[in-house]
Image (cartoon, rainbow, N blue to C red; front, side, top):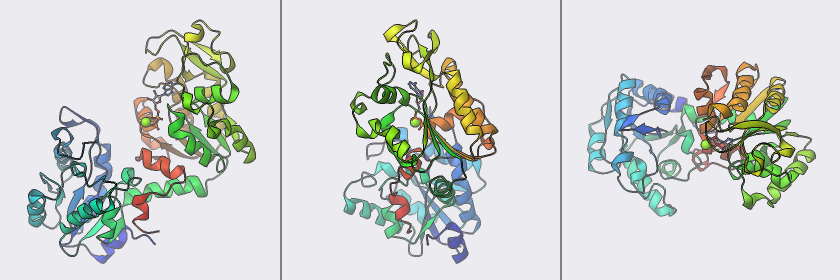
Amino acid sequence: MTATLENLLAEGVEGRKILVRSDLNVPLKDGKVTDDGRIRASLPVLEKLAAAGARVIVTAHLGRPKGQPDPQYSLAPVAARMAELTNVAVAQAADLTGDSAKASAAELQNGQILLLENVRFDPRETSKDDADRAELAGELAALTAGNGAFVNDAFGAVHRRHASVADIAEKLPAYQGDLVAAELEVLKTLTENPARPYTVVLGGSKVSDKIAVIENLIPKADTVIIGGGMVFTLAKAIMKYPIGKSLVENDLLEDPSVTGLMELAQKHGTTLMFPTDIVMASEFAADADHEVRPVEDLENGSYGAEAMGLDIGPASAEAFAEEIRRSKTVFWNGPMGVFEMEAFSGGTRVVAQALAESEAFTVVGGGDSAAAVRALGFDESSFGHISTGGGASLEYLEGKSLPGIEALGA
Ligand code: ADP
Ligand code: MG
């Protein structure tokens, strides 16, 4: 059994240095945090440990620095915001495992938090070489001096075989944080025992990002609904429809995973729903002229073969909403159209509304889908769960094993 945070607290943490891997990868602008959602989400575990008398050492990444210190990716603004959000004392080290980190860890008192500098400033964090990662993991573990422990609370990073995510669990007794536990429970429900009917709604921009999820969920779902920019590659590959200048991934048109989708659905008795109408625009612009066209006749409208599909049409949105309304479990990942532009946000809005009003267990996954829910003004509490870890959730739903989870033990 995987050890949990509760198990660790029951063992007692007073005076012990506990290393926590958190997901603090927040957007920054002009040195300020613009969305502190991940900091707020990470605080409960840190505060629980601090309240129990632990000396809490936090490691996290921010952005994609190139394996060396880069001031624009410093966690300093995150430490500042964290200090504003909690009553616990928050210190920050100027490096990861160097002199500053060692001195700060040694000075740390019971009930205090120390945030180490961006773990990706060290090239060993993401190294493909096992020995490199093990070495960094050893240095991180050494900061906890003797009777330490490791808590992984960074669900958004568990699909990475990185030193602070996976290798560290070889160096310290390892525990599952509450955020990781909550995400896994939801994902297990979606893949193992969903209440039925179970509908999966997949949209977004690229088929290549989502095809493995579609393939893995077709056998598990009762209905799989496809919207967003993905529609056009599939419409061209499977139905041979002309699609104008709509988004297309040409290298997938002959790909068996794409051309075989209908058969896969048939084999499992799963209903595959495509849009029947599409909002076609004259160009990719917020103020572009646009009109609704039947999906099988996209190039015969006002803009001919120059037309671009930027949203599902109203009839499709209503049909999708109807299917969602009769479901007991709904997983939604990927906007139905270019929701960032008002004229092309209708499909996403109707689908989000149906989820929000549903009594079913509803899960929203994916960074842009969660952003769409907020941007369109929905109350986050109207959804059963909004997943924080985009890539990690999708890899789980693809059926892949996650190194950060494996490392915590089955
Ligand atoms: P998520 O982050 O939720 O997994 P994706 O990253 O796959 O979602 O896709 C989100 C993006 O897809 C949005 O920026 C949206 O504008 C874009 N998109 C949706 N429909 C279309 C379309 N028809 N044409 C071009 N882009 C689209
Ligand atoms: Mg995205």
